Every structure is written in C-alpha cells, then in structure tokens.
Length: 297
Image 1: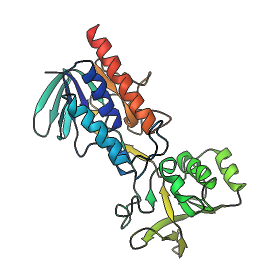
Image 2: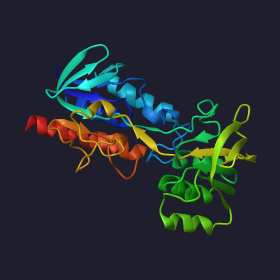
Image 3: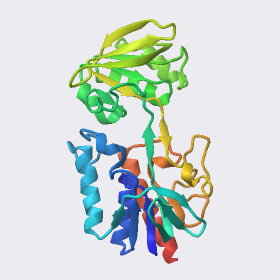
Image 4: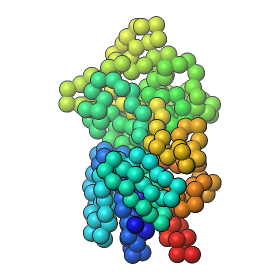
C-alpha cells in the first residue's frame, strides 16, 4: 500500500512525487519508458524562470535525482489498467494506493517520414517557444494548420529571417486573426495543399522536400522545421473509469480532480490551454498538495 501512486515520470509526475515525499508520504512513480517526458529532448531551455541555459536532459535528471534522494520509489513498468479500488495493474505487478495522480503527458504527433527521429534537435523541433531562438535570422518552416502552428509561425516570424507555413489543405483550422497577421508579414510565405515528404541533410537538416497534392515536388532550403500537427494524450487505458474528451484528454473541471474520487490529474494529459514546462510542474505541485490535504481530511 502506497499513500500516492503517480503514473508518469515527466515533469508533472516527478514534481508531484517531490511534493508528496516532502510531506512524508510513501510514493510510487510508475513510468513505461524513460523519465523526463518530452522535455528530455529539448537541447536547451531558455524560458523556464530562473534556470537559463539548462538542457532538458539535465533538468529532468536533476528532478529525477531529487525524487530518488528523498526516498521515492520509481519503477519502469507499463500500467495496464486502474481498478475502482485504486489498484494499479502493471505488466509486472499490482499496487494499491490511497490516492492516484495521472501524469502520463501527451506525445507530439509526428510526420512519420524517414529520419524524423534522427534529426530531432538537429533541425527538427516540436516546440517553437523552446527552440525558436536557435534560428535567429535563419530560414524555418512550420507544418500544420491549427492554432498551434499559426501561433508558432507568428512567434518565429519575429525571430527568423523567413518562415514557410506548410499545410496539407488550402484552408486553416486556426483562428482568422492569426492568418491575417501572418499574411501581413513580409517574411512569411504560405505553401498550401502540400506535405513535407523528405528531410534532407547529413548531420543536421538543411532542406526539405515538399509534395503538392497534385504530385509535384520541390526542394526548399531551411535551417529548421517546426512540426505542429497536434498532440496525442496517452489515456486510452483509463477510459473505463476516467472521463475523457473527444481527443482523449482527461476532463477536469478545476484542473486537478477527475470524475473519480481520489484520482487526480496533472500536466499535459489533461484538458488545458497551455502545455509548457512551467504549467506541468505547477500542475504537479497542485495535484500532490490537493491529494495530501484531502487524504488527511
């Protein structure tokens, strides 16, 4: 029996563990893959308050070690399901808790083209606010048609010398005011009815192949490619007991409670407007302190 079981060892989950351990609770963190979540792939964090120029790997490792040093138990096991009595079943064992915090995060959707994973951090990025400053006065492309892609393009247009906005349709899903703002910028160029089909470069990205819906192809020289084609939460295993929205995110009226008493949520896995490192750790702290207070009450 643990006081709190946390599913996910990203920034939200590890922050939850840190706060719970400092409150002298017995804590288990379950993680299917590696600690750190998406942030571990960020070569440099420049927008986290008070920690300029730290790598995502170092940030995540320091947080992981803080939890370990406080006596937290971290097991790399895959959660299969959660039962009504707060029993967590994994691929190796089963555990019971007084409270559970779900912090499974969300994964950036990929383009699923050759060398995409290889070139992450070498010209391919999924976070404009994290990596945009590396491309000052350089040429970049943004792929996507929603608000995130358009916001990324606006942000990058103030940093890069030229921004291509590539979308597979001729209309955008994002808000009109972003589109109008981009149309009024001299350094922004739209490439519509097109997909990125090839990444070109040896050690790092230096060009992309773009294929129009009619089959014509062209090569564009770019220093960076920002992929903004959506995110996918990892909540399928919870749908038997936890209320999800139509995109699979956990619904929480107040940002911490789920529809199940004693089961809380933190980080990118929940419905929210801003998915950033700062909001993930904030969610983790709130989830843990709320769980502890209600447990003790």
